[in-house]
Length: 217
Length: 280
Image 1 (cartoon, each protein chain N blue to C red):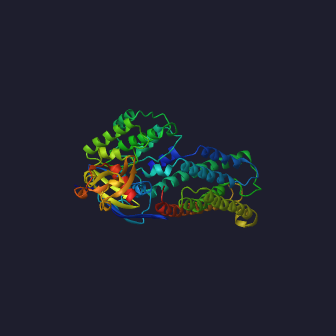
Image 2: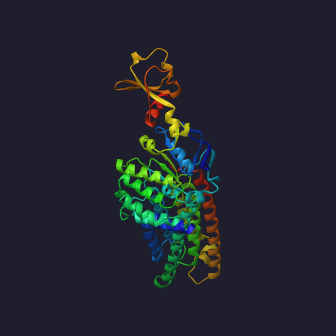
Image 3: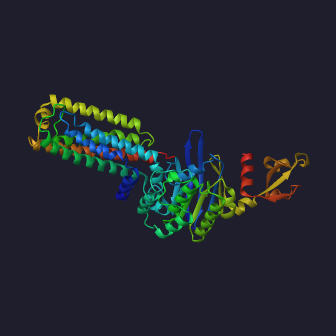
């Protein structure tokens, strides 16, 4: 059933700009750029996806399908997670290319390295927690939940830049070119993945609870 | 007869409107017409049945199963069409159907093709290129093609031309003969005069009638009169007096017809409804 829902989301809700946003992972190739911003664009893709779904009355249609109401939320989460996974894979590819094409440290925050993927996971986890539960209180409201979640994402990007200059763990270990401190960076990515999973699970549960109570008219 | 759907004390509160303890049940193979004026709560009731709305109270059981606990399995057996629905305007019908088809275990492709042909639907068109009537036909084609045992239809004949309406009513009668159950709300009460077995009449959020169409229409008679020719003491028998070109019309209860000195004739659903609403 979840696979069918994912296919439905892909076929009927996915907005074409998602591919442009995915392509913006190439920002990682720009020297001296806050690379965390490249993950923000994928959250923007989720915003467009949600807007596309709203304008096409996706919820009304989906409610007629033989699917439990709460599972419609799961379907949307699955598509968003798939997009995020694609963005992380693309970012990974850009990080490898960056080493070859732009082999200089980044003065504007985290280097293009393994730890950057961890940052992406944290940003996505926080975005899920702030965007989806607010959006599923009233699926017609997308702007305010997105603004709130985006503000948090940008604050975290600024915090990451500050930490890369101020905190030794970031400055001397995580914000270094690969393959230096690969073990520490891998642990950071794993912890970030754990946070992502936990935040997403919590966001899903809250969103389902809100959506179950929502009147769809 | 087994109950396909049992609704008990359904309550939904909005500021300024309450769907007030609505209870009814549907029998297998019957067509039930759901009537009431705009804002009476028909769509609220139908949407509550399908979990679009979260009711504030009451029980909804399909085939003896609680809707919330068995939503997925129950919806496999239901087809729902609403005239107000409008979705994926830029997607081709072919694509929407492909998605819909994948969700239903009992999808009958040959039947779907037959309805496409009957309704003259082109799958390469997008919903934005369809008239409202054609959109309803497309939704009906989807709803009728997955072997639904119960069809819940919210104004399915609105926007359809008279020929299409007649075709659709014929389909409903055939489906009922096959044992399918149909609940449909409409303002075109003449459609119900032709096909409905039972009537649910909702007014101001309360269920005013739940009976067979025959029982409902035979409960009242229509009288036409001039005010001055109305014998004294008979005014209290009149229900929902309305102006007409020739004078006035009103309902009287069938059991009062013998006591009423003027001729009274049988009436149809629309005549009953408009006079009862006037009385309310």
